[in-house]
Picture 1: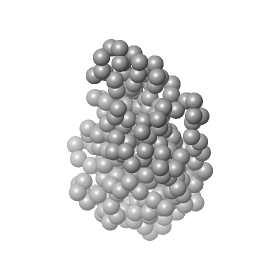
Picture 2 (picture 1 turned 90 degrees about the vertical axis):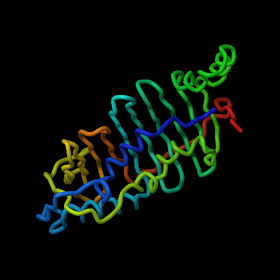
Picture 3 (picture 1 turned 90 degrees about the horizontal axis):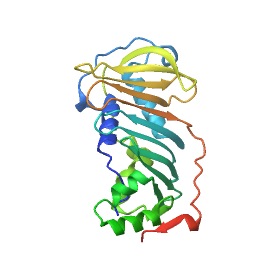
Picture 4 (picture 1 turned 135 degrees about the vertical axis):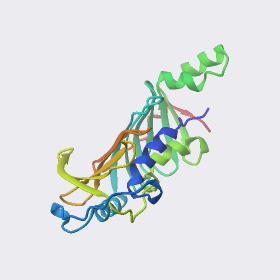
Length: 247
């Protein structure tokens, strides 16, 4: 059974969002005016500073809302630098997978009924019925090293999650100060072509973490929100009676 749902649209959204630092993703118009707490830093320098800080976070939560019409994706995950991760991923209208990764070895996945039916659709009716009965409401225990789990677990790796960002982009436009999740933030925007734009919101108080990335227009509009920086990630393996071993 293949445990990991497709991540094509998620990857596209992340690439689009992190294009604010990727030289291959198009030109930026430069804006070097002073902007509040960041003084004389230009937009590019602020974004570089923010992503460097975010990569260094001990833990965080990420909320992904990708609104591609063909297959919208939503995910909410909490992860830390010690390999722990927990959350949910929903593809399409209903297919939801819950995930618990308590360490660098094991991962537990629990599929909702829509996801289970998708997984067993190629089996005969009797096998489908038996598998649904066994797996419904229970967790599948697998290995972190299993290739079937690789795509999903990339979302649990902070460095992998931010790997699309490259430092040194020129000319990101600084916008207004605002608030994101109750925290003061500065908006920095790539105008883009054809009506597409991406805006990074950077915390202006305390550590300059990335708080939100909003991509509008284009083929993969969506929002990525970062929160709960440096908060402990609580992961506990499910009770043995609720687990189905896959190895």
